[in-house]
Amino acid sequence: MPEDIIIADRPRHQLATRIWHWTNALCLLIMLMSGLTIFNAHPRLYWGEYGANDDYAWMAVGSSPTQAYLRLGDTRIDTTGVLGNWQDSEGRTQTWAFPGWATIPSTYSLADGRRWHFFFAWIFSAGLTLFMIRSLWNRHIQKDLHMRREEWRPSHIWRSLRDHGSLAVIRQSATHPYNVVQKLSYIGVIFILLPLMIFTGLAMSPAMDANWPFLTDLLGGRQSARSAHFITAFLLVLFFLVHILMVLLSGPIGQIKAMLSGGQDRRAL
Amino acid sequence: MTIITRRKLITGAAIGAGGLLSGCDALNRNPLFQDILASAETANFVVQRTLGDRMELASEYRMADLSPTFRANGTRDPASPEYDASAAQGFADWRLRLTGLFRKPQQFSLAAVQSLPQRTQITRHDCVEGWSAIGQWTGVPLKILLDLGQLQDKARFLVFHCADRLGGRPYYESIDLLDGFHPQTILAHRLNGSPLPVANGAPLRLRVERQLGYKHAKYVTGIEAVASLAGIGEGKGGYWQDVAGYAWYAGI
Image (cartoon, rainbow over all chains, first blue to last red; front, side):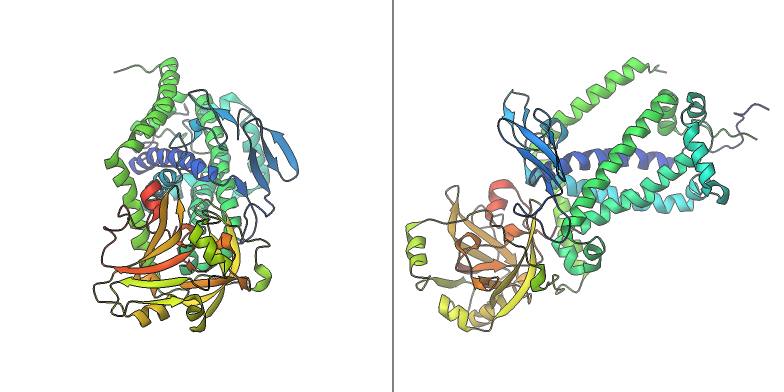
């Protein structure tokens, strides 16, 4: 029997999933770019409760009008032209850490960056909460993301990872139920990384620290929370890059169409 | 039906990315859109004030937790002839004036402020830029000054006037009465057991521990009780709010 017989009348991606997917993508992009504006105000990261210019930063962007570097621990990488020293659209040298094309707004304004960040943070948090509730209700989590017991076996996960070396298998994933690597990625993003963005963000707020001190304590202090916020954001960027690569390899037009109009649920009988 | 080719898709994505950037900058200049974005700041204020019993204390720390150096930011030295003259005599002639909607407007010398009941607290100072420093502050709880001055019923905000100027404008800040009467809100004159250094706001600076650093006015010369912030500065409640559009409520 052919593998792609339509057995269900439901779309591959339900309406709630599609609305959330695109709203969330927009929010994350805007929050990443406005977040880089905020980072530019103090391009140094620390561990612990406190951290300022005289304290040891585990990560720092150093800039000057002639050259710039990124320091990770004791390793210095020259970033002249990329980070900390770059040309704006009018050819002037700027010494903010992240360049204008990566920030919102494109010229430095901490106040504006914060406005964009917090406005979309509300939409992002409300969207994630509603999506989680709806996905339990419409059984998206139970049907599509739930890991069956045998799927947790390391050998199963390893096999699924190796399968991603084959273009044919990646192509198939567009019409098949999610494989283990997909499930783990989506679970990791939806239930770990995205909530972590919210909680590490809240832990940096002095008023939240007064209301919910356990949040900042749990993360090891305000500067640790800020570092974790930054690291988690870049794990999401990493997910985004792999996600886009997989969409491109598995047939981008069909995938994007399915995420817009729902597509069809095709499963092997 | 329109056929989407790969080339169209890639061109579209490139235009989209470029358009997003210039579009964001255009939106950023639009006053209506700025107001929409700023509505989130109101939401932050309402939600954070609703979360607890409104008198929750900021975390306090031990001496072992102090930052080795407490960073100074903003004005590090007011450097006006009047300020320098006052500093030269250990601020013996410094006056803190209670003005505006007080039933008993009055002024205090630094010695008078120091003779009132004091509070010492080790707290974390969180700058809007992202850095933090832990310091030990000693000063008079603002509530004691407010009780001596006796606020009129119309009073809603406390405006802190300062001796420093940034870019030619006087620095000022304001808080509401809830923060004004909060037990950790103090006018500090000591940092880490020593008289407050000039860089950190000598002789008197505000500590309003549940908000970001720019609310903690330095070089405080007066507290004005007002019914509305409209008549002060450009009406947004503080120097950075007027000049750069920072949020008046800085709890996040």
